[in-house]
Amino acid sequence: MSRITRRGMLRGSAAAVCAVSLPAAASPRRPNIVVIYADDLGYGDLGCYGAAGIRTPNIDRLAARGTRFTDAHSPSATCTPSRYALLTGDYAWRASGTQILPGDAPALIRPGQFTLPAMLKAAGYATGLVGKWHLGLGDGEVDWNGRIAPGPLDVGFDQAFFIPATLDRVPTVLIDGRHVVNLDPADPIEVNYKTRIGDEPTGVANPELLKFGADPEHSDTIVNGISRIGYMTGGRAARWEDEELTDQLLGKAKAFVSARRDAPFFLYFAMNEPHVPRAPHPRFAGKSGMGPRGDAILQLDWTVGELMRTLEELGIADDTLVVFSSDNGPVLFDGYEDQAVELAGEHRPSGPYRSGKYSIFEGGTRVPMITCWPGQIPADRVSDALVDHVDLLASLAALVGEALPHDSAVDSLNLLPAFMGRTDRGRAFVVEDTKLMVTTGKSVASSGERVLALRAGDWKLIRASTEPHEFHGNVIGTQPHHQLYDLASDPGERNDLASDMPDRTRELAAMLDRIEQAGRTRP
Image (cartoon, rainbow, N blue to C red; front, top):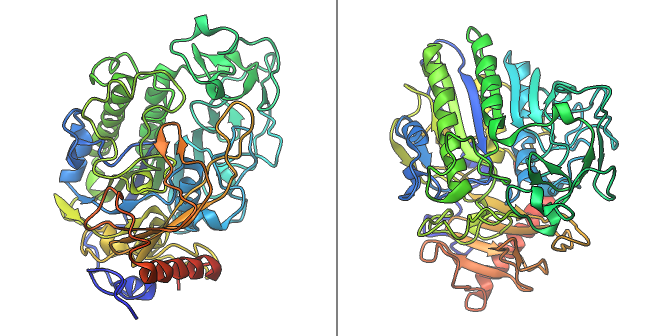
């Protein structure tokens, strides 16, 4: 068998990775667990990852108190699939319908499905969601004016205060549990993603009402001076104000941890920054010098700092495992004319890696990741372990002593020693993934084909694909033939070695085929 990587033969098998044991923790009880999931934050967007043009002192402090990963991956280069994989432990490409969802999509995770919050709930944890959901709701036609189910409360969360989809999609309302917040029954909500409804102004018809322009895809109903994807009528009292939204979500996150300070809790804090539309609070507007995207990163950093300060004031910071990361790589222009491209200057949001969100290149899934648990995780440590968010479920199950059903979390590996910063031994391989939403008419067309790549040590194979080559300014990385890159010498994926190394290309392509066909990677 040929040599796959300079670090050795795939570092053994997945089973060998799982066999690594963790010394017993000295904490008096199982830790609280907080997963902070940023939205479209790149590998190079933080000071602790080398960003020089923007200051992120609070996240940098988190890294200084814990372990920072240099080879951590989101499960996908787009949001819905990454969130699905994080919460279920299954690669999203194994399931149908796991592309970027519209705001009225049915629930992707079904009641009864094994999930991270359900596992922790069984272990005695109080479980809460605050922030972005974007995994669908209901069974096909959501009644925004009544009881909304199934949703987060049906897949393991005790409490949920959340955005249904994304900031740039209707309905622009918050949901508390199963009901829209502040809904006036006399002003019912209606949502349509195919046909214009009602007489609400739109970005196309009323550009003079906009805070900033948008492309055709993002030029439907205007809410708070920003045009969105999709049409909406009603619910005027329930609509959020973008500039105040992060403060509102932070307040809910702080209330959740404060109310549960005396017993273990799990908080999934799915933040919005720096996803479009970028309309940060006036405290941050104009402060970064990079326009609204940079300002949104400042707001993200401040919010993380405020949540950490709350944990410290409650006296539970040392009893809390914090995991910080991002759902996929960065994007500058993503539909709105907010000068993110023009004002970026020398800032490289993907760091040394190529492209970003939507892309099968490393910039699409190589993301910042930090784990912090004072006294348990080494401080100021840098790890090059190959890890993936899909592994959090199995790893946290090992931490709290819960077993995984054989046919659930089929791609989640127990990498707890790596996440605890006690070894650089991570995965033998990672499957990277991107899939654009199938669209027609006003947005860039996609076949809906799933694009897969295999990382095996330093080698990366990108499977042949006919998907579009570029989307919203990011190079997708597709070619009609397999591509092969040696990331040790070519982290920017500029030198395709497939024609020079046909045997290795075939070997890795066959390996990827086997992984896909096996239906699971967990032993």
